[in-house]
Image (cartoon, rainbow, N blue to C red; front, side, top):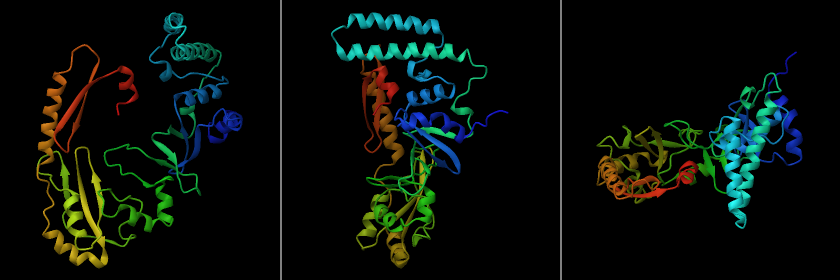
Length: 330
């Protein structure tokens, strides 16, 4: 009888390593009713995949790069050994090289181990989902096992409720919890989108505009929250926004408390909601500035990277190292 590859089976394998602190960098819960594991990094993923196959200390391919064949890994080890010999007194470099060499050797051992197994498996074969902790986290309410997505997975994604010093709250907990007062206070009079878990009706808010405002890069989409906030606040009216994002533009609606709806409608109808310069114009200026800045950088000296400020239509450019590029340029 085949063993069912579910969360229970996985926990039977990895529980000893969780209990002794070896795997202290995972979080287990549920996302939309499906068992979910949040993992810190590729090393943790590699350890879990190794443990599933009866091997401890495996190093995953993303960690060692794009090396595919044992011969290539062996050649790389020789190169690193030579570099280590050339840097005997540079402790940081020496230790870093030794760590890479150890990882590569373990990778070879793991490849050899897998050849002894009839049907090797990994975490993707289990009836569960998993993701890294820069995309998911456990709900910060402290009373559930819900997992929350914390980074976009589509253009229409809207961030869940976030509470300072605590973390993200799952939509389930927002919907059945006591967060309305916090949401109303945290999101009022700011250009942040209301979290989608609670409806505006539940929050006691009413929509002021009849047609959605638009901001984006297609030309003529010049509406912006700033003058709306300023205009309504000047008459002691608090304001909130529902946002509907897309790839290059967004719609947004204006909400106020029910008691302020009539006054807010009149004020908004007499408010200039548009920016002085079309965002599409600023984007064009920024792209032209980026092209000019990039052309001034020396050729064949690294990876060219430009940053455009779409609020001002300006840009900066610089050379980045391959390591910076792979890690993600901030």
